[in-house]
Structures are given as structure tokens and as C-alpha cells.
Image 1 (cartoon, rainbow, N blue to C red):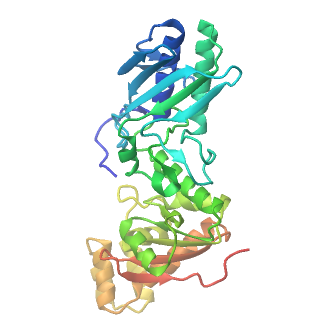
Image 2: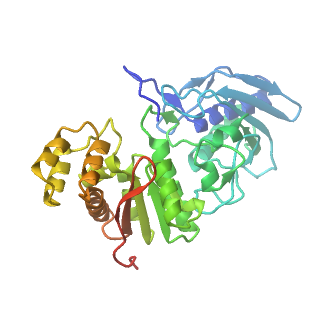
Image 3: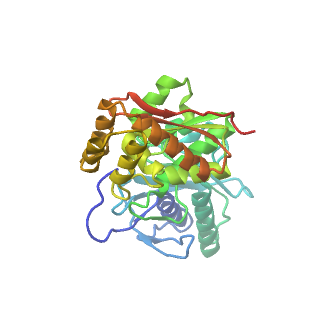
Length: 367
């Protein structure tokens, strides 16, 4: 994740809000011959932002408008993307239908809030665009029966940096947003992707998933188990958000994997594992080493160590199974959070990808 800039952060707009603005402008032009610029839309919480048009084209049977996405100060992969909406008259009585153009993905796996075969346009943006069409139709005498094709040039390449391929969204990006507003560094999109990853795994009947803090731990779990791609959840630092969702939407077995520092934080009760929001507890690690029989000199060295990695190295050289202890304690924390509805193992990997600590399932998966 990018480093958060200092000072007040500027909000931005979701792809769903940009698509709604482009749709509003295009349908207005289709009915009146004129593009409103800037174009005003209504967001789910009542805000009425204005969007400048970056592209417009009026044809005989359709109109197209484009808006450049401004994600504010959020490190969003789609910041600066051009969101295009082409609107044409649909079948009478057909209402609003959606099509995926260039750079917008199509759903190919069950478990997402959109049916297989449909454009990857989430429910809230669909509702926002439908309501915008209805308002424009009421103002300018239209039927409201339209076909909307959304495109994001370059979206297929951008999507490779997202979860979309693993979730079964192929060909491009998703049109996302629940409020229309991007709150910088809220991480809401990441947490939503964790939830959708769990949904897809459940819908495809998987009984074992792996939630990993990063690519090194994911590669480590791949060496342990022959799991399909959709079984892997890119948890990042959001252990709490992932485990709380599993409590409500359980799978039989979870392998929870990460580095020593992050799993030690989870063992200590931290549910956000980011270095800026939680710290390793050197005293607690020294206490764990003491209970494992480490001498006092080793405990003093652990208390004054600069990093968790240094503490792990000290323990390993002394033959103290500290990583296994942290794995067991993290397992207990995670198990309590899911209230026993998921069988959990914890695997700890060092920076080279070697397995250094593990607390296995130790019991059968819950019924």
C-alpha cells in the first residue's frame, strides 16, 4: 500500500459515481441534443457533486459521454481512468439494461452479487444509473428504456492489478461503489474484495481456503496444499475484517498465513496488522520465550531488539520454538473471533518463504 500523505486528505469519486455522471450526460444529450457540462448527479446519501466531461459524442441513435475518475488522495489503481457511457434507446418497456464495453469485466463465477454472464457492474452503481435515467426521462420526456454500455479504455490491463481475475471477473474492471465517494486510505475496497473472495470460494463449494498477508506467505501455502486460485484470500493486514466475515459466512477450514511480525501481532490481539496501526510487543515476546525456557540474557536481547525478525532469529539460534508458540496463540485468537465456526491453522513464514512456525488444525472441521 502507498505511503499515506501528510495533512488533510482529499476525497474522490468511485467508478460507479463517474459512470452515473457519464450516463446522465449521455442520456440528456440523446433526448435534448445538448450535453450538460458539468453534469450533476445525486449520490445515495444525498450529495450532489458536479463532474466535468472529458469526452462527448452525439450520434443518430446514441450518445456517449466520458468522465475522468478522480480518486482524491486514495492510492486507487483506477485514478485517472476514463469512464465512458454510451446510451442508446432500448426496447419499449425494457427499462435499463447494461453492457460491458472495452475494459469492463464480465462475471464468470458464482458468488458475486451479480449473476454469471452479466457485466461486472455492482448493484449500487446499477441503481444509481437507473435512477439517473429515470430523472432525465422525467425531465425531458423520455421513456427511460435504454441500453447503457460502459467502457474504461485500458481497464483490462488495470484489472490485472486487482482481485478481478481471481474472482472470475474477466476482461476488465468492475464498476464499484456503495456511496459514490472514495474516502482516502479507508481500505474499504480491499476489505470488500476479501469478502467477495470468501463469497466466491463458498459459492464454488470449497471446504478449505487460505488467507495470506502477502505473496511470500501465499507461495508458502501453495507448497503445503494443492488449492485452486480461488481458495487464496489476499488478506493483507485486515485479519479482523476477514475473520469477522468468516464468522457470519463460514467455510470448514482456514489456513491463516503470514510473517512472524504480523502473526505475533494477531497473537497479541491486534486485528489490524499494519505497521502504522499496531506494533510488536517485545515484552510479550520475551515473556513467551521465558515460558519456553529461554535464559535471561536471551530475554534481555529480545527486549532490546529492533525488529520482530531479529527476535525470531535470536530464538531460532537458541533452539526456542517461539514461532510455533506465536502460531498457537494466533490460532486461539482467530478461533475465538470466528466463535468455533471455522477450523483454523496458522502457518508462519520467514522472509525467504521458509515455514518457521505452525499450529495445525488439530481437530476436525466443524459440521
